[in-house]
Image (cartoon, rainbow, N blue to C red; front, side, top):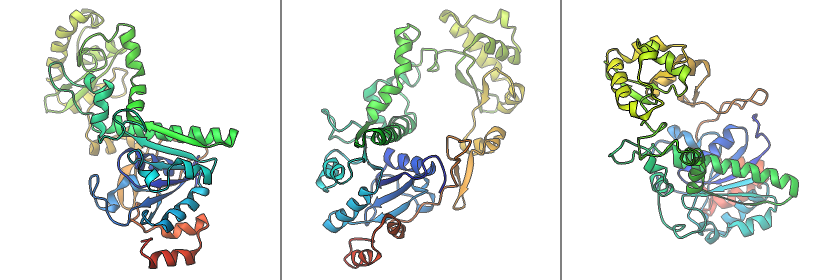
Length: 380
């Protein structure tokens, strides 16, 4: 294995949402991750064939009956040799399994014990169910996304699950591992989606404090309220995204659209926004998306065609960056970020549940013990 995290080991408890995505990122960057699966499908989440479950790529799967003391003992041996642990269950589930922070840190005092949930490990809502949209609603962020007078728009589940959840869990785990290198002491990382999304709203809080964002949903500079930061429909039904916040970039946009920048409504004055929007919308609607893309190719106008996923994979810039890789015969997003010296290997394909039990030998587990556990129905 290669990559900047080569040499680190993590035990992942299978789940949905932010925890598996965090484990994928760690594995993609070179860490060795062993995934503890249930013996049978959980029925939770969106079912899909294993070969296209890309968020489980790059790691071994071991299927265990965690209600068995023998399985818990086995997992404890893995934890003893791990740098970190990832779990995304409701608070108390790992404790009931006998795998809570207290016994795990007693077994491995340097362990980074990562827990990701929607609400966090404590607070009035800690034990209630939710999904990405649920958590965004409570942070104020969901209320800021959408058009004036219309309902808030769900931003897929990228903002909550993966930005506020997965990425903050990974940052927390790596920070805890670094701390353990210095102090010799592990700790629990409580990564709550509401906390992560709340933190991500820090720049928005700054704009509010400065008086730049003062209106409601869809009425401000960066939420589609400003005419020079929005998407416009083209003659063929495609869309052109324009985002020239700075004056010099706006002049490039207006020139490309055929306007006289000096005679165009000054968008630094909100009173001119409605007229500027009408002018931009009418002009952009005169030509196709790809026509405008050709006009603005290589310019600083911050005008970009809105591509779908298939088109994005074929885009010259994305191709030049190697944005798509093929794993197990299936195109999928490439590993990010990029490294000058420790670029990771190509990830391995997703494994069927329990197919990676052979990896346990590399963690020091006696093969004869595995035979007994299989015979007893504890290990798939």
